[in-house]
Image (tube, rainbow, N blue to C red; front, side, top):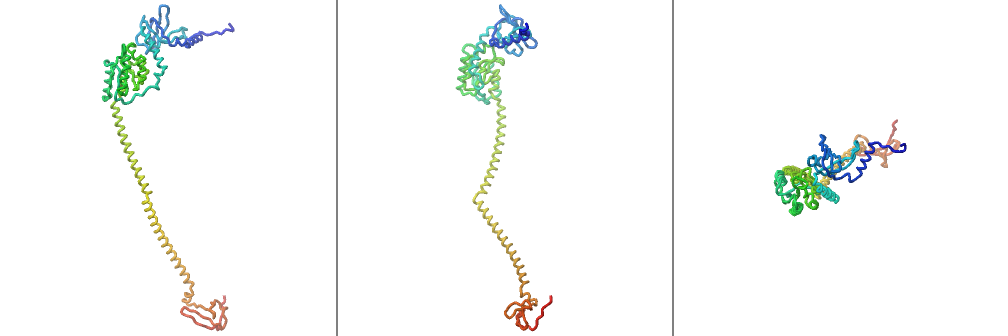
Length: 403
C-alpha cells in the first residue's frame, strides 16, 4: 500500500466525467425511450427517467434549455432526446443532459434537419459575409407564401399601416405538403425577374412536418443564390428552419418581416422635411460664403488689374511731385533764411558799413592797407577813404597808443 496511489471518491468521479466529456459521440447524441418519473421542478428544471425494456437512464433538462421542448411530457410517452451524457460528481452517477426533446416519430426528420444544417454550414451558406443588407426604403416587395392564411393578411395589414405606397407582389406558393419546396423555389426565381427590392419568404407557425418545406435543400440554395435580399419569416419565434439560417435576415414572424421590409412612411417624410430644411440652410450658407468669396476675388482682381495699378502709380507720382514741391519750398525757405543770416553777417563785416559809422579806410601810397602806425613814417603820403569819398594826406605826426 505504501507505493500505491490512493484517490479520493471525488477525484475518481471527476476523472470519469472527463472521460465522458472527451467522448465526442456522448456530447451530441439522440436517445430514444419512454418517459418515467417525470417531475417539473419549481426552479424550471425537468427531471425524468428514460427507459426501455432492458434499461433506464436518469435525465435532466435545465430551465435554460426549455425552449427545446415544444410539448408537456407525461408518463409513458415515447420520446427522442438530443443531449450529452456526463457524470454528476456528487452522486457518482451518469445522466443525460437534455437540450431538445421530440415525440417519437419526428426523430428521423430532426436527424435530416441536423445533417443538412451541418452540411450547409460547412459549405458556408450561413456565413454572414454572404448576407446582403436589407434596403431602408423598399418600393416593390415580393412575398412567397400561401395566398390564404394569416401570414399574407398580417403582411398586408402592417404594410398598409406603415407605407400605403409600397407595392406588394405575391407569389402564391404551397408552404406545406407535397411539392411545396418546388413552388417556393419557383416563387423566389419569378420574383427576382419582377425587379423587386426585397423578398419575404415565410408562413405561419406549425409542427416540424408543417414547416418542413423550409428545411429542404433546394429552398436553402435558392435563397442563397438569390440576387435580391431575402427575409425569412417562418413560424413563431421558437421555430428555426434552414431557410432562417441562409436568409439575409431572419424575422421571427411574418408580421415582424413586414415591419423590417416596409419602412414607416411618416418617419421617411419627417426625415425628408428635416433634410429639406437642413439642405436649404446649408445651401443658403454656401451661397453666402460663395458670394463673400467672389467679392474677395473681385477686390483682389481690382487690386491686381493694370488700370488700378496705373491709378496707383499716377497717384504715387502726384504725391511724390507734391512732396517734392513741399521739400523744395522748405529747402528754399531754409536757404533764404540762411542767406539772410549770411548777408547780415557780411553787412557787419563790410568796410562800407564801418565807413558809414564814421570810420575811415587808410592806405599807403602803394595802395596797401595801413593797419598800424608802425607801417608809416612822418612825411608819407596816405589816402583816407570815407563813406562819401577819398582824401590825400601827408603824415606830419604819429603817436602809438599804450596798451
